[in-house]
Length: 319
Length: 319
Image (cartoon, rainbow over all chains, first blue to last red; front, side, top):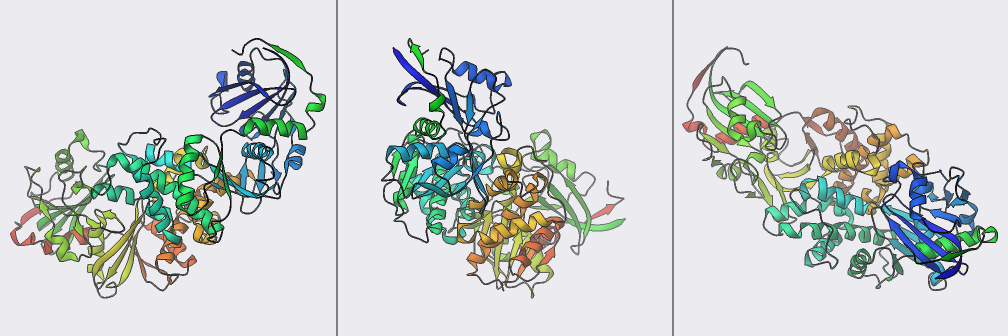
């Protein structure tokens, strides 16, 4: 392989680091991934992680998005307030002066004043998703399931508002540390949700305005009462908590499930959310696997980084 | 001291063991308490805990209530289904055949089929509270705040229905293990709730049908946005989660806050709930500190244990 490359993009979150090497047209030439999130750095050092993940790559200009720009990150980059489109976000991109070896830039996160909310990294994925099918998705609700699920309203191509629901973190806490998960396997749920997942969705929907928080203990009561197998508790809880996200969404939408949804993220998790979406009356959502690579390229372009990027030859097979 | 005694009552929960020695009129002559809950027994043995907590007491007949009768307890005692009054519950009291040294009996827990729910120990506290002011509380909602808060509807002197909200456990999980509590002190909240607690209550009330689960992440966003001191996060979360209990209660009550409430439990926690009650429009609730001792005596009476209890002389000062 011998291609002209000019940008490295980093999707640098709490628990993982992904690196993309782009050719001059924005095609991803090489991808690397490691568990070097900002909380688990090699030798405790951001520069060590960056050096390791880019070994053998040319010294391109770098754009990073995600928790790397947070207060606990490499260099804090102030939030940009919503509503914001790609150009407003691009104006918030800052040079990382703490990085001596590279010409490195960091994307800002987004802030919503009321209700108070923040994100770092998801905005770049949404930019990527919008660039893929901009017309279709000018007005859409993006759902990014995960530790802190984001529900993001895009209106006329701008990120207008967003919610954060701590579904993934609450699920993990309950399974690892609570009485509900006592003695249970801490494995992730199965890729294909089963009937217990549907029972959890049902319970969340039936909880009405009281909400799934009022039903959490029922998974234990059902089990003690021999109405739920202990093995099915993880799926039931997964359904109850994901169902709660959709119950909340329906409240926000005034009960109107005609809002188009688009899922971004891990495919098996997105599949789970797609089942929940149709269960709650939404149309089957589009699923986008990884939008960060496209988003980083688009954001670098809007921030003018390409204009002073040097071009390098990239030889050889990626390690 | 030289009195005639005839019953030992045990309030034996997950994390603590309380023992009461009664005279022949049901007055508590002596009280002991230890952290020997069923999950932290001395030498891993129920009988060792019982022997230690009753050292020096006469070999009276014993009635125990709480998790000691659960599947993880000393001997499982089947649940009694609601609605149930003291006589129905008393019929479920079983002899503990696993205890060789004592004539020991264990109270059953209560089970609600739909929505699925269980309790063990709280029913005995409610029996005690009802015996104290039976007329006044024949129709009342008892609230027992704690790890798994119980909201118990008493109608015509019977326990008719109940909810469990995992407020205390969720609070502890969030403070100890989640991003919201990262770097925070794990101390319990202050005895007197402050303004941040009221902000949390307010946020729960304002969350409407979406519920406080949709607002959990806001404590972090407010902090990052310099609208909430890091020191105030524990109080804010306490208010948000306790407020969620009252938001749920109002939904269950169809928005009618004229339902009389009565709090049973730890006084500083009950004070916190009393503040929340009035914030959500309920009349200031009565507070009962410890109703278990009275409940055990009443339940022993209804179960006919007194009729074949022997009387012993109890000399000397309690250890």
